[in-house]
Image (cartoon, rainbow, N blue to C red; front, side, top):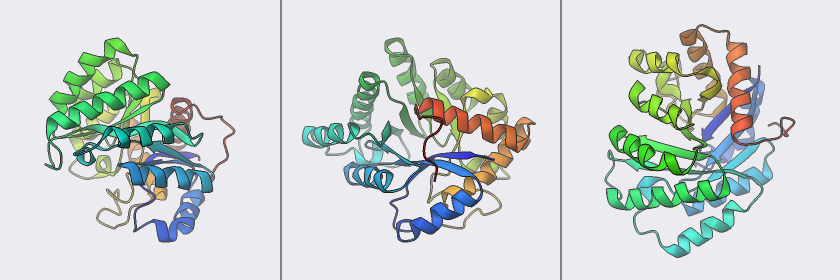
Length: 264
């Protein structure tokens, strides 16, 4: 079985000191690759450094919406320099968030549009964060999809089928994290059941969101993506091996990795 964790924050202080062991445990359960996702300039730089120093780790760089307040053009120029690094395979995480109040919504929207334009100009996948703002995300996608057949991911998806279907219609992938395994997540599993298998991805969002049967145990880590994969396979009604192969192929194609890329 080969797995691909499309979203992890490996630079987190709960993971970084034991990163070799964390990646070793992931390797043992079949994780072949991990995308390390930046949320601001410093963590984006860290993601690149980790991708340079660890085989099978790939960097995604950007400003998460809750880290956008007070950003300057100089910050953006520094991010553009990072995007040129060969370890960088995507832009993000970006998006919208009405749950936290760390950044005014208008600023979030402005920087989301800048990330969108960057991903479009580089033809790179866009990793989208969404929290308590499904209608806003649908509106954004509807406004912008005509300008670009979108390559990207609705990350750690917890939305309804209307939001998922709009994202799928626009060309995006849907990625599920540990929440889909929770006992109370029947509605989310019903959405997952309807997502075409060739547009389905899995992630941990490490160090957060540990899946059942490890819910609440932190830090989450890439090897635990196996639990999410097994839950989705059971939900959809396919073998875990088959879905692991499909979701890994989806990640490799989306991030335009060589199929023979160096694994963890």
